[in-house]
Image (cartoon, rainbow, N blue to C red; front, side, top):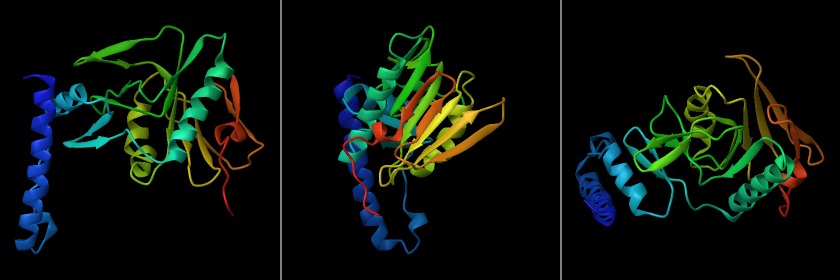
Length: 222
């Protein structure tokens, strides 16, 4: 099957599911009775290869990670730039949201908004994609559609990565960053930062980021 064929099949399948759901919903009194298609990993990989967008696979569901608000774009760009500047010349490297992170307990991989690797960059080949296996810092910019996953199941999946030490959850509707730091194997320390003049001390990569730099170009109303 060609990559384009995989994309077409996925698109037709999705349209069929939507049309069938609409038709069935007229007859079904219980929404749970509406048939639901669970996508296979092969279907997911076909979509990933056929599209320029980024998608995540969640137990039979496929979620598009590309696109979003202009605020999300700005924060993602700001955090990558600030990390790259702070880490320049050292042993650690910042990556954008295009870099996939292998999550051993939640196959096959996730797409955070930014990440940091120290030392030798290590990959795991997953289908046709190279996923990073040794991130030290992972950053997620929260959005209404992904907030629950970022705070819950995705965080748990990242915790299974042995090199993972710090997690940043960045709000986009207010100046608020949740910073998790791994103190021991199962002990995570949480710090909430809301002062625009405050700095986030990323101990694992020996750098600091100001909230003002993360939210550069944005203003929030009280």
